[in-house]
Image (cartoon, rainbow, N blue to C red; front, side):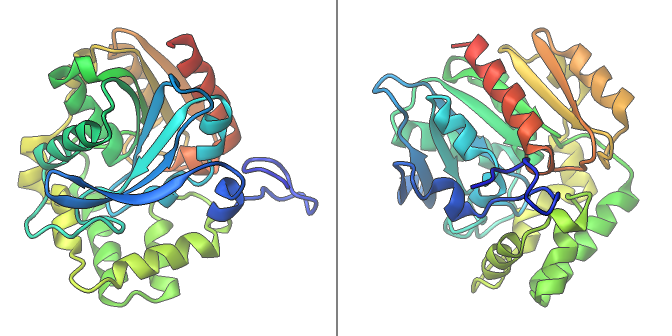
Length: 300
């Protein structure tokens, strides 16, 4: 079976389905209570009882399946891998209020406690990177390292946020295949890299009764974003080693901006993934996985 990031027989990149990647790996998919939220958790327990844990945190309106192309690489490298859905996201119980960074921090802390995980490697994509940047200085004793995959949270042009909000709202009000695919095209550079499975999974989530894009995307509102924003000082305050992953089509900043942000991190490494946009862990999976696993093994 060809893996994510490897050429298929037709010469095109093969993006594996979720089941392809996890079917033969020992895992559990279950729900745990974390801060009062019935939280969906995918858990690969690791090759050894003392295996260190990588926790995967997705982007805004995202879900565990955003890491389809990466879970196997981490698991086969000997790590315990835990993916989860935030409140209001994926199949975790819905939120009855607009979510801010403190909500995500409290939920993550409650999840670590519920799973009895003392110290973990936190891999965060977009909102997950934003969460990692804010969580790490407050709870350095709970983290070993962070992987910042196209981290969000900086103040960018409001026109970009308006476009994302519009596409997202339309995908929820009318969760057709095409509308949801357009939402994914905001983060994935090449439309051919969007699998039907990824669209179908997100369609089902957006169609959940009571699902609120307003609550899960609340941080895109300018005033709320400003009071939760990531600044240069947040990068400079990271108390643990970090792998900073950027792309050549990142919508929030060019290659130079990614390198500049990484240079602020006291113990930072930089990876530039070409041919990708806001999901380097998906579109540049082979390169991402190799760099991430090497980085983690350096900090065992």
